[in-house]
Length: 103
Ligand SMILES: NC(=O)c1ccc[n+]([C@@H]2O[C@H](COP(=O)([O-])OP(=O)(O)OC[C@H]3O[C@@H](n4cnc5c(N)ncnc54)[C@H](O)[C@@H]3O)[C@@H](O)[C@H]2O)c1
Image 1 (cartoon, rainbow, N blue to C red):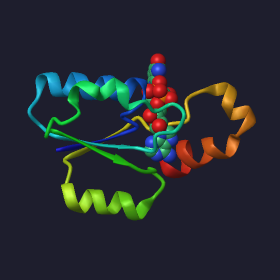
Image 2 (cartoon, rainbow, N blue to C red):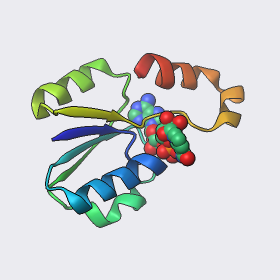
Image 3 (cartoon, rainbow, N blue to C red):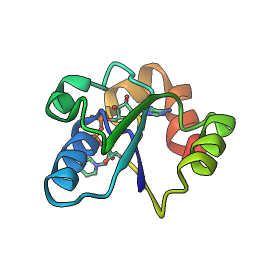
Image 4 (cartoon, protein in one colour):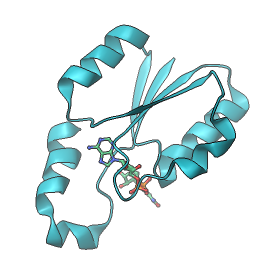
C-alpha cells in the first residue's frame, strides 16, 4: 500500500494510472479537489479495489494520521501542490498552506 497525495492532479493521476498498470500494490489517493483536481483522469480505475480515493487536505493532520494508522502505507508520495504560479500572486495564502505547511 502506498499513499499518493494530490493524485487527482496532472502528475499524480498519471502516476497512479502508471502504477496500477504495472503493480498489484494498492494506492490510497488523498486529494482536496481544488480547481486543479480532476477525477475524470482516473475514470478508468474507478471501482478498482486497488484504488481508494479520499477527498481531503494534506494539511489536515488528524485526517492524515488516521489514513496512516488505517492503511499503514510503506511510502508516501506527495504531489499535492498549488502549482499555478500566476495564482500565487492572487492568493499566496493557499500556496503557503499547501506547499509549505501542509507538505
Ligand atoms: N506539471 C509538471 O510538468 C511538473 C513538472 C515537475 C514537477 N511538478 C510538480 O509536481 C507536483 C504536482 O504538479 P501537477 O502539475 O500535477 O499539479 P496540479 O495543479 O495539476 O495538481 C495538484 C493536485 O493537488 C491537489 N491539492 C492542492 N492542494 C491540496 C491540499 N492542500 N491537499 C490535498 N490535495 C491538494 C489538487 O486538487 C490537484 O489535484 C507539484 O509539486 C509540481 O511542482 C510538476
